[in-house]
Length: 523
Image (tube, rainbow, N blue to C red; front, side):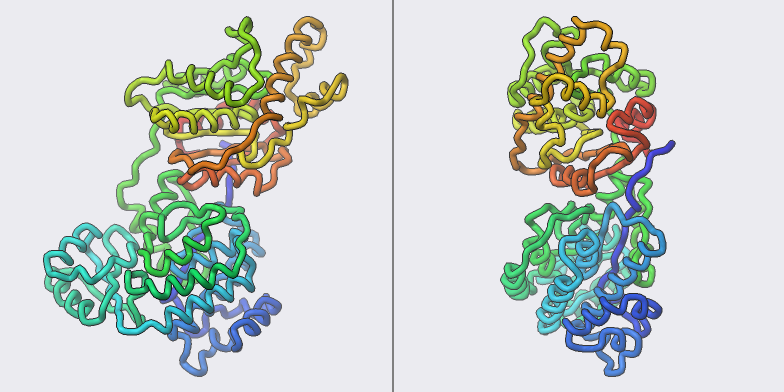
């Protein structure tokens, strides 16, 4: 099936993967970046990583910048060698800064400054310790902590379903080691100087938050899953999320599961490191992952000029899924109803139709192409506003994220031949229609009404939907990666992106693939 999407999932390791000789073969390939790093950090980063002459590589203040630099060089090297840029990025603790760098939240120099300050603050902390525990779930660990009056300890790293790390005062960590070993659990002291990712890092978090206020962060162009929330980063929340990471748990297992829920066949690749994250992913993959729910119905909204027949070819490919097209006024079975050009009124109309078809506990999906994509998104918002059930997924095609103004927002103002010439460029007007003047006159009224809706469409910022979004585009459509990625702002789940051969109306050659994505099956 010729569905293509981003370059899989990139994993960036954090502190603990450092080793003398790390980055060998990379420093000579990127002399400019290496020189910049040494200037910003104030020491020879290549010599530190390759030779560690002063034994500083295990000192947090030096470890974190070193791992950040080697991770960055490793990722650039993988892309230069032909690996496609990752569509989803995850970093373990410090590695999250590399994920954000790869997603263009900040440049390399800024990343160095952030990591150096983070390392200095964390390296200055003393009096705490961390303990890795293997063989018990987070729930069981918390029960044991309560039973043994060890509630001074926090679960700092939720690495896999049965591998977690505790953090807290050193004396209590020592006692916990004895308690858990007595329970038959494997335990190992983590080589750190403080209780990282716990409540005891609050002073460092506050100081780091103040430091972050001096920086501006760019919009991300790829999905980055945050350690602190196990959800995608949102624009405007980089600083608060990074500071929350200092005294919050690293929810690694939850983050990987979030990707697997939306992309069960995701291809993970570890950047640099020693394979520890890859091993964690394999353990996480063995845990039960909720299977994608197949909808019983899909509510579809047609593109500009479309009607209830626009998606009819989908029916034969949807199997047991029923297609219900929400018909706009003035066409198809509603041809005698006045056309609507107000977006809010149209959304209310479409939501009312969908509401009539809702059945208790019956899973459904919503789909729309082009104008239909924007309206489908607004319908999902309206369902939430009315407290109605949410779809199991929203599938949109042929359109950029709704926060990006439509490329067709001025089409309704074109007149005469210019209007039809533009529609010919889009490829949406059947040539056989041109010989029927009365039909052309009716079709023009319908089209102008729909394009007026696009011209009047205004995006309002709201909380993202708790609905997975799959976005599909043609490889000849003029959308930038940022245009497409703008859909990530509208969902708390990792965005699923696919690209198919063709122009704006690529769907007409790919009904089976589209049906597959609506059903939620693995492409």
